[in-house]
Structures are given as C-alpha cells and as structure tokens.
View 1 (cartoon, one colour):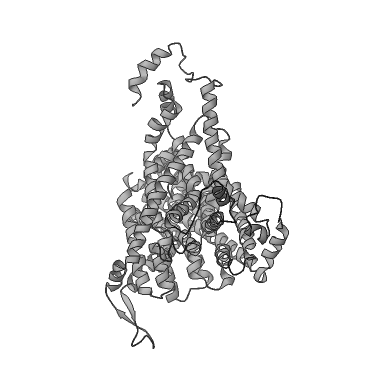
View 2: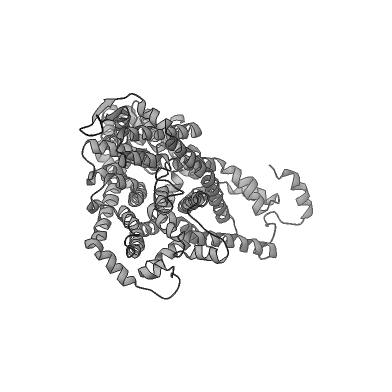
Length: 306
Length: 325
C-alpha cells in the first residue's frame, strides 16, 4: 500500500517493539493529546447540532416579550405554563387538533406502509415468477424518484378527482414508499429461512396463511424499522400537506406551525406558540427514535443511502 | 446502493446468498401456480397504491402539460382548454426564471454537498477512531437534528438568524461581524447551513456503519506498518468507503434539485435575496397556486422529475443486487 516505502524505516526505529503493541503506549503524551483533540472536535460538532435544540427548548418557556428581545439565556421572562395554556387555547384549541391529525396521518400511514411493504418484499424474496426482477426494477426506479418530485403532479391529479382538501389526499400518498419494499426484501432474505416455509408447506398450510403466521412474525423487526422511518417521514412532511390542504382543521402540526409562523409579524404573540408548539411537535418523533434506536440503526445499515 | 449494501451489511447479504440457492427455486417448482397466486395477492396492495400515488400523477401531469387554458377576449368568460402540444415545455424552458432556478440549485449544491460530505465524514472518522469516548452519546446528539421536522428546523434557524432575537447574531455583532440575511451571499450559505444541520448526523451514521465494516486486520496491519491514526484514516479508511461517500454525495445532489421548504421560508425573511420562485420546485408551485397555470406547472414538474431521474440514473447506474446473483 501507500505506506510500504516507510515500512523498513519504521521497523528499524522500533526493533524491540512487540508485534501487537501500538506505536505509542496508552497514557503517553502524544496519545493523550490526540485523545483530547478527537473528543474536543466531537464535542464541538455536538454543540453545533445541539445548540439550536437547546435554544428552542429554552425559548419555548419564554414569554413573547423575552423572545423578541433575544432575552433567552437569562433568568427573566419565563412563562412556560402561560405558553402551554396559550398554545392549547389559541384559535379555539386548534393546535391539539393538528397534533391529533399528525398522529392519524403518521400512525395510520406508517402502519399501512409497513404492512404492504413487508408483504411485497416477502413476495419478491420468496416466490419465483416471470418478470420478477423487471418488476423489482420498477420499485428501484421509484426509490430513485424523490418523493417531492411527485407532489405537484399529485396535487393536479387530486384536484381533478376532487380529493384535494380531504384526509385521503394526504393519507394515500403517505402509505407508498418503494424503499420500504427494498428494505423488506433485504429483511426477508435475512430473517425468514426457506426451510421453515417448506416445512409449513409440507404440513399443508396455505401460502397466505404461511405469510400471516410465519413470515410476518419473523419480519417483525423489519416491519418496525419501516414503520419507524415512515412515521418520521410523514410526521416531518410538509410539502404534500401544504399543497393538498386548505381547511385548517385538516392540517398536520408542521403545516399549522408554518402558517402561524407566517403570521408572527401581524400578531407577535404567536411567536411563543410557534416555538412552544415546535417543541411539543418534536417530542413524539424524538421519543420514538430514542426508544427504538436498535431499529433505525439496523434500517440505516441494512439499507443504504436514502 | 449495492455497494453500500455490501459494505455495510455483509452478514445479511451472505445469508441471502446462502438461502437463495436452495430454497426459493425449489419452492417455485413444486407449487408454481399456488405460489404465483399468493405472490400476486401479496404484491397487489403495494403496486396498486404505488400506481395510484406515483405513476398516475406523473401520467396525468404528462397529459395535462400538453394543454393550455385559453381565455377568450379580455380574460372574462369561461376558459377553454386547448391542445397545445409541447408549447408549455417551450414556455418553461424559455422562461429565464425557470432556468435560473436550476442554476440556483446548482450553486446551492456546490456549497452544500462538499461541506456536508466533509462534515459527516469527519465526524464519522472521529467516532471510528480508537480515541473517541462516549461514542453512543455523540452519535445520538449528532443524529437528533435529523428527527426534527425540516420545517421546524428551518423556523428555528431563521430565528437564530434574526438580529435582536438570536444570541448568535448578537455575539457576532459584538465581535464586529455583521450578519445580513438580506444579501444573497449570506442567504445561500445560511440556507446550506440549515440543510447541513439536518442531515449531518444521518450521513454520519451511514459512513460510520461503512467504516465499521472495514476488516479490522487491515487497520491493524496499517498500524503495525507505523501508520498514525490520521494516516490510517486518510490512506486506508477513506479509500475503503469511497463508494459510500460517492453515492451519498450524488443522491444528495439529486435531492437538492427538489429544494423547497427552506427557500420558501427564507423568501419570507429575505424576499430580496431568495425570490418566491427561486428553485424549479418553487417555480412550479407558484405556477399552480398563484397563477393557476396548471399546464405550465405540469410541464415544469415533468421537466424537473426528468432531470432528477436522468441524473440519478446516469450517475449511479446501480445494478440490482438480485439480478446479478
């Protein structure tokens, strides 16, 4: 490799070094210094990613005057309870409505998405049929087309069939994720041994029964991974809801906050509700990811780029 | 994708390869008709919804892009829709606003992609180094922004860019550094920063997984040869995960073409720097919602989707891992 030319030189310099000893012994000065450097750099990166979140957390507890004055990291102007109750009562308690809408879109959408993805991925893995890889190529093509590229065409179609400004306009596109099918196929090859299915067939079980009572339970972790990723994708989604919905009672929380934020200039008191509402809106996804760390890790590593 | 797949999850692939030889084909022979029926039932829901949510809209947009609303006289009276061939495409391509949208996203990508790749690679390498402590904590903290809804991230950062509200801007000011979101040279990097903040940890996890998959013997050999940690990172680790980095970079660049919510928000704060139709996606949005020109919006959407699909196809040429096997 590239280090070959230096090799004899180094070897000559450290003739007595035992084979497995590192260059510098732990605890020696250069090593301590680079440990400090590595960890300082990591800490700086962590400050970069965490500072805006910290700001958001503290600002959520500040009254609008304190917010607008930039008076965040002081002990004045705290009014968390006032913000929360204001948030819950603003515009007839619509925030709670938005929150429940988001739960419905993200919860329902991701559950259906995981189920149909797992079924399709399992079928791609376990059955041989004509044109299978061509069909799978269509799925991969779907992975390549970014989902936001189809949002405006979706709107045009939905307005043609009068689905605009209904729950379905957001729910139906939310259950489709070609990447979920790809992931499910990877999980199926890894977690469902063909021998088990063979044994069930010998016992006379029907194919769909085998999927329901053997395949699906074995793919539970794949199901959870896909559901988790889709849940956060829908929860974080904004573009689709923005174009599809005009009735504010149907808004998901992301769209509602955006609309409030747009009106801050006319109504400065909204600023606290925007920030406080953002913190509340972030809690479910953060909690999910913290509880289900194992799954997003496996999803990212078994998966790929998307 | 195939490359990352094999780099990050060799176990899964190995098992997959082992399983395929024996099971699937046998099952297919024995119960061909039954298996086919089951496969169709299992595949149908996904493909039905996929057709409904992806193929149909694109097909309809293609159709719609061939028509133009024609208003008689002074624009009063009912509009009639007339077939106009490729005229909408011509209008979009001839519109300097639409074309400069592509230029804007290209400039944005030139700033954003290299910085994002360098940043996430750096933290991944730092985490992978034997010297890093509290790896789990750092991984979580760095990943956290990815879980935050993009629109909320953009709102938060915009407040952090607002003089008077933001502690960062006041700190910069007291340090003698001015910050004016109103100028393009500030607004575009400011937007890149929001995007980097959101995906840094996500790509870090991907790169970290790829780094972890490098055979440890290789790194031990490098260390035995006297390579420093830094040298090992540069000459051994980086070349080993080159394909992951390349793919992430290309996919990010294609994704940037779709830029929408960040410029939409920045347009409110800095309309002089970021116009309402700053990116192709925003242009199509404005055509549909402000000008109600569905034909032009459809044509613009098709052009954008075609550029994206073409780009991702051309730059990756990904082979389906199951096809070659």
